[in-house]
Length: 103
Image (cartoon, rainbow, N blue to C red; front, side):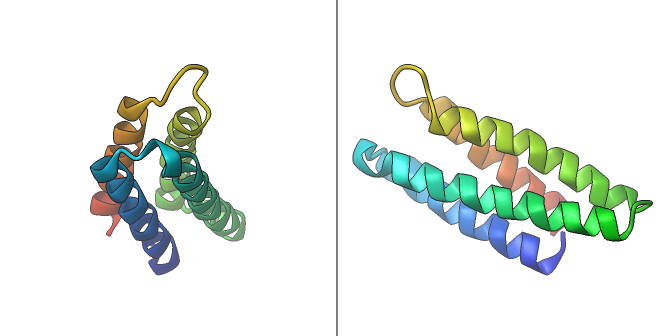
């Protein structure tokens, strides 16, 4: 994973781990908003790289995975009812898997 994207992934992982450890409903929405913004930055960075090198399949694959992660993160941030800790945990696990495979 490119250094900047890896750094962003690490930042988001720290926030998700802290959130899951505390399960603090008061900070949950702010923390998840920060995670969402971080994943969007990851996506935007990868979009720029794909545009710069359209034939770079590994970058495109990372972008696809980050897009899937963004969907899960967004669904955890904006639940219809209550806090979806399982989605927050899934977001954390997907992000950790992404960082481990590419880092």
